[in-house]
Length: 241
Image (cartoon, rainbow, N blue to C red; front, side, top):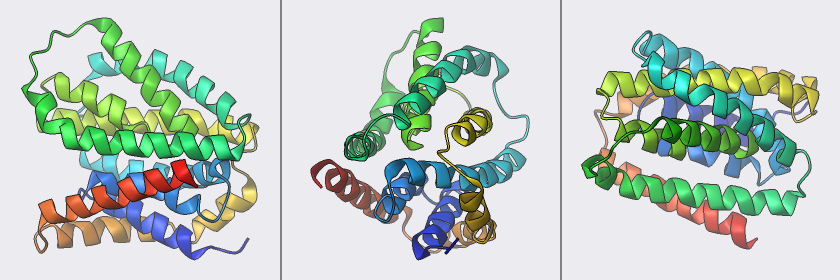
């Protein structure tokens, strides 16, 4: 298959995001690819790129995760994945674009409110983990947009930074592995797409390396605000197109 320029940029954005420059960068990938292909194909094509990024994230935070929280999150996440795949393969593209736009704006709202979340007085309950896992699995399968539910939940647990990052990394690594056979079975991703993705895989570690170089050379806050502006533009474009 012809490798689209947008796919090269998507791989680079995933690398920059996994490298820690700005997590919001990952939210631009599916909206970017959906400008040149149906949303379902964009979601499917992004999955192998995310899985490569997961390998690097797990290596960085190996065994830093909270097993108890993962046991709460994963059963509902599997149910959410099944529901998300079912809708992804049945809804018309125009509806998927609007859902993707809504998820993108939710990611912006989460980023703007994350500091306030840390200051909330919160009493944890087991069902909160099930709800967060289910919503995250659903949004991840439907639009690779499962970040906000799980990160809000983990923020409220008052984890150490390493435990937060490790638990988040392992959760999405497991979710993405679970999604793969369902995506293949539902023809959301096919062999030609996987072959095309191989050519851009080196850009993911390159993006991680570039991210680490840029972190000490740019204004992080200004860069994150730029990403939020781009995400907001992408969200409204998908909703109104």
